[in-house]
Length: 352
Image (cartoon, rainbow, N blue to C red):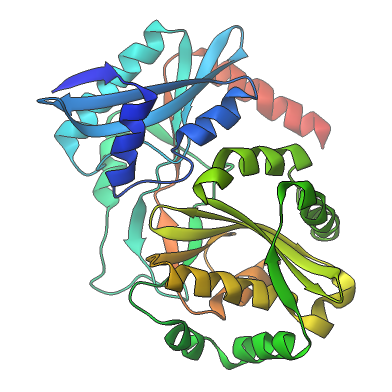
């Protein structure tokens, strides 16, 4: 085996075939990061010129001129293949240390254990806990606070018709969809010039629910990067030309991914437009032979006492199951990591 820096085109070709692919591990996301001060890299392990594992990584000086290296949604590797994992990360570690890096952060798109729709482990289901053991043995430490969700909620689509999927939804969810249809709610895609419609709705929703909204420039950049390949969709639900709800979706690889949305509070209960948007994209996934409809993040395992339980309950109404990823990990390459971590924690404490 040999470790190499590879070209963007070679990485793109490999990523399309990887079972661990994620839209976060694309040259387009590397481009987005580059526009915000990061430097992209592509690394691979080869055997007889065949790529066995690879990653897109980005680096940015964050502390005393030293760089954080990050593989968003990656790397694309079988984390239970101990020999391959050791070879890949030992060589990547040496490369990063020799190129002014003080830490490597990873958050692979890699499932940990099989869970049902209530978040319970499935008896006899798969378990990939060896992946975590391999990472810990290499010196990785778990990161409790991450920008990427550890728990997702997803619906299997493969070989199921729209009618079969609709019949599998909870009764209340079906009723909300039919009500929206009877109320004359219409769904359409937004052009780039119309993205302020989405932004206005997500901004008001973020203010109401207390989360940080993305800037308009982010939506515009994602449109520019992915729309030509039909890998991003911005959807709006309207009645009498009034925007009721809007959402952003990725259509990458084997799945449709629901990323961001918002609804006008004045019309939520009257029209239930947010349900119709989901149904529109679930049908799209089925009709275009996607294998999975990914509702994306839920805030931890389902807990009725959680203030965010309603988000999980909304997604659960469409069927599906909880997906647990292995999480986010840091590989410390310099004592500067701990100093930087201490300063960040102190800054956060003073802010509060």
